[in-house]
Length: 561
Image (cartoon, rainbow, N blue to C red):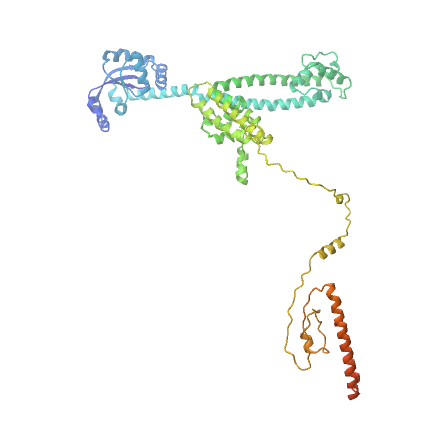
């Protein structure tokens, strides 16, 4: 078995002396502990040294990319072709496939071969004679620097720095152009203020000012190349009746110089935009198809590079550029933002406000896939981006049609209609809304409300006591009003009597009044007889008793009433 071993100085081909040792993979490292033991396992057969660093770099680059270099091909034809029956042990399986196709040699790659390579690398100074350790280290360092410089030069990660710089410059140019145009309009507006209202396009305004100069030259100036006929006629009419002030030739020359600057910057901006568009289609075609050149370039610029953007998840891509709003929402415990830089994409812009969140989420998911395909994939076509964009557009149409069906009730999902029931509601005109002055006074309204409320009267039970001497207990079925407490003139039995309070109907009141009158007449007759008898017995006590009886009469009359 032959072994192909690559070094910074050149290619080395070893012959394996004892192949049985390779079967014991775990114990193979013990055979390479010393140079003497290593020389018993493998022996150097041929060493092809590199002429210079350029050749070494070309060979190393070919090995990294899995290709067969010229120098390696030459060595294999010279040495290995003589012993074609031998197997060739190699480090890279991809390189072995290329060698098998082009040179028809059987190549071997296994864990035992990897362990063998590790042992040879450990005892390389003793196995390869004629190479001092200092020279090998110097060659390794020089080749490492050259290879790193080559990778840095042709790395796809570093090409996107041009995109980052271009989009930053484009934003700066837009800001400067706005400032210059505002200054130009304000400056020339003192001389010809009507021109700013007639010509709204900034570039056309500056070109017109550059051609006109002083407003007195408008009549003799041909503006047909810059403006339509109607606008040109309006400008010439406004120049005749302009309210602007007169300015000197020096002022006009400075204004014209500013107009030249605006025109030059506008042309350079258009050129820079074309450059950015071509560069984006070359580096990130799928991302460009999904979100456009400007939004894609801003996403790359914000992330730092295309590879860094590919590492971000879709949720981060969705809100990239809205970090300030995100952290403010988290701090105040409010709703987080739904979109960042991706809001300026055409797919999000053409949706309704209700569906912008859904579309931005779906677009961010597809954009994340497109970025990873552009950064890590080998193909440079935009088929994946076109396919995903078509899916998003179909989904967008579905969402929009769904909303329309809900409003109109047409389409697949028809609106449900309830059973028709005719209701004849006769509306009467309400005159209360004609006047703001209340027809009924507030006091009267309160009284009417109180009258409408039903009066609840609690019925109290009659307390009955055992009759005593000199006390008459009368029980009548007709209810009477409650007695008031009197002074010492009333008897104690009369004070304790309490009668029910009930609502008396007008028909019952007439019968009760007749009964009360009859009782009063009987009592008056009995009292008159008693007074005559007492007067005959006690003529001296008449005066005191008469007073008492008069008081009693008054009380009874009040009760009767």
